[in-house]
Structure formats: structure tokens, C-alpha cells
Image (cartoon, rainbow, N blue to C red; front, side, top):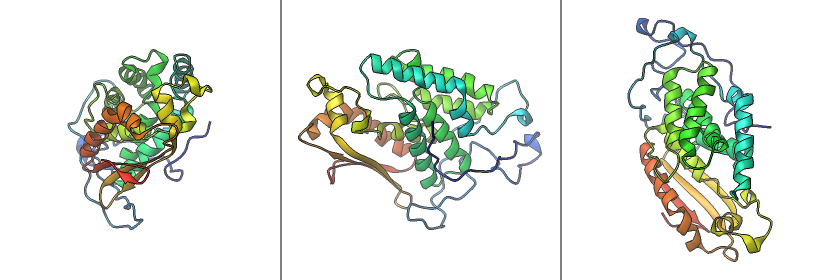
Length: 290
């Protein structure tokens, strides 16, 4: 399994300072969840600093390990976890059995990559980018338990994995919040990690996800996905816009069918973009609709 990377391989980062009250580690942000630190280049590729990113709300503290024992868990470690691999494999098998589109390693890897790209292009620091990548990769693992409320199941399962790898409890809980709130029926984008995960997940609309070989048996979800010949999320860091560009074969599915099943998802993407201090647009067949 090959995981797409949003940036070149990085050297291992130093551990968090053992005494957080004695001053920040010069090589780390003063708060690893602050969202501030390394400047990121804008979508145009310039090195100019972009608009300051929003900090995550609040600071969570948990008993247990001392700060010096927490590790900076990497996306590569998460993807390589046997537990995570088993969950994704079984989740995809289950969803296939009940007639859903592909939710396997391809979807997990793509959502991880897009979520990280969103954060990077909008100017969030390297650690925030990686936490979004981790959330994106894990967001659907709860489907191995069942489809209903799978976001909550994903969060609970992810906690065991991330704490087992030694992740800082504050980071773990924010990833859990992102996973528990990515479903449009009842989720709320409450932090940048969750917002990026939502938009990345909803952006994966493509004909390759359809597993039903019989067009006569297609439901509306199959028709909409199989009609999507191209989908791309364009992130403009300077303008702070996120535009989902979709090319639809209207002989297979009409644009109105897309809106019938995806309107709530697009509304959630708009709310998620606001959490990122950005604006979400939808463009179908070259026409901007949102």
C-alpha cells in the first residue's frame, strides 16, 4: 500500500519539552496545537507569509504520561499500523457488502493527502498539516463496526491507536473530534483539523469509486459518482478560497441529481471553510454554482 505524501520525507522531530513551564523548545511551536509556527507558501508558490491561521480552541490536559513521554506521531506510522490496516480493509469489505462505494485504502490515502494540502496551502504549520493528514486517513475506520454513527466509532478506535503510538493527549482528542464530526447528518466543523477533513472527504467524487458493474442496478449515488469524470479541489492560499471542480457526464446523471444527494455535504463544506477562515465554491462543468 502506497500512501501519497503531501510533502517530502521529513526528519524525525524532537520530543516535546519535558517541562512545559520552563519555556518553549526553540525547534517546536510554543504550543503544538496553536496552528502557528512555520510559514507556508501560498498557492502561487511565493514565499510570502499568508494570513495567520486560527488557533485551535482551548488547551486540554490529561493525567497519565508526562509531556516528555509523548511522541510526535507521524502519518507514516499511522498508515503502517496493523490495526489501522485491518480496520480499513474490513470497513471497505463491509461497505461493499451493503452496496456502498469504495471506502478503502485509496479513499483513506486521498482524503489524507487533500486534508494536508488544504492546511498547508492555507498557512498552517507543519504539525497541524500532519494532524489533518492523520485525521483524514482514519476518518472512516469506524465502518468496520457499522455504518450508523461511524464517525463516533472512528474516533473511539482512533484513540486506542494514537495513544498506543504515544501521541500527546491534546492532539489525540482534536483528531478524535475531527473524526466524530465528519458526517453531514450531525457533524460540526469545530477546529481546523476537522474542517480540512470534512472538505477533503466530501471532495472525493469520482467514477472509480463505483463498484456496481450493472448500470441498470445503479442507484442515484452510483449514477452521480459514475458520471463524475474529474474532480479536483483547488486551494488558493492568497485568496483563501477552496473550489471543488467537478466535470460531470450529463448523459449519465443530471446536475440536479448531484444536488439532490450532495446539497447537505456542500453546505457542510461551506461551514468547514468558514472555520478555516476561507470560502468554499462548487464548480460543475465550468460553471460556478456556489
